[in-house]
Length: 400
Image 1 (cartoon, rainbow, N blue to C red):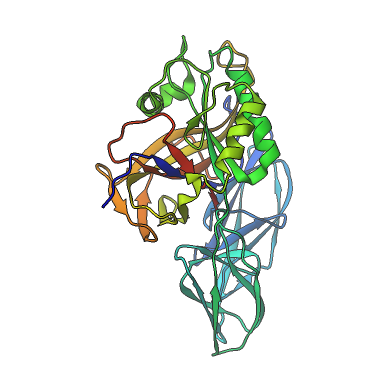
Image 2 (tube, rainbow, N blue to C red; image 1 turned 120 degrees about the vertical axis):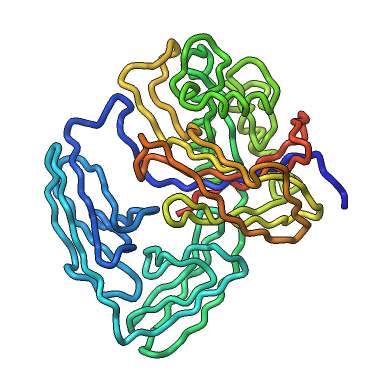
């Protein structure tokens, strides 16, 4: 079997929401705890689905009135909604009771890939392809979806009590690219590189995902580097460089990390039809709060050896006063924890093969639901040694 020295990485992101200031919670914040019997219901706040969480769940909200709803596929809910007024420092509870619908029909949802979340009437059902979903009689809209795929056309079906409907979906993957930014709160030029990266992100929308490493390559302390120094320093050591800022697009170094034009050019190359970015597809879901179910397919023509890495990133941290001398006060998608599958060594994936895996991870205690993302990439590298010009990171995706 031919061995490859090329490093390919595929990225998977679970974005759960927003976060509070790093200097402490806002003064006008209260909390709502949403509970149900049985647990596992989807939560809606003012009509917006709260992705990535099910009952029981706690939400920190600004003072004001909120309409809380809960739903669970195959169940009726009581009450239909709950109007809650949040005050500064208050903690309120909304409780919902789910009753299983006795006159139930069933929909069998199949796809050409497993681990794709199934949506019913616009809300996640809590199940994944392939699965059989119980539903109340009536008209329902059904589709599988996650960030890394081209959303398939929803199917509208009429469910009849006792009947079984089979649905099958063909899944296709989007072309997306990963940017890695290396920064530090005391790096004078890093704000310029950060501005360039975010300018490119704004032009490409969800076709790009950026993560921000903080190795100790500038004088003075950096709070992100101090939180997990080995993780940040080892990522810089893998690329074997000294000096920041640095920007890598799909594993390729941007020679001028402060140039929007230079970064955009590298992104364009990564989106090219001949780019090795497209040699793999990655998708999956977060289940039970701290387990990632991940699928990977080698879509190219070659076999590969490598490992899957999972990073828990802080979505956004704001400081009222800059923590370093470069004046930066806002930081986005900074890795806080990192896991590897397998824990040592590599696995082989053949051309056209699909491999499914589960990866357990932990979330820093200072991050609540809505404040972190989960990023997974496949790093194609048999020996763990970076070779300039060969490394490829590809197909980042947000999971719901």
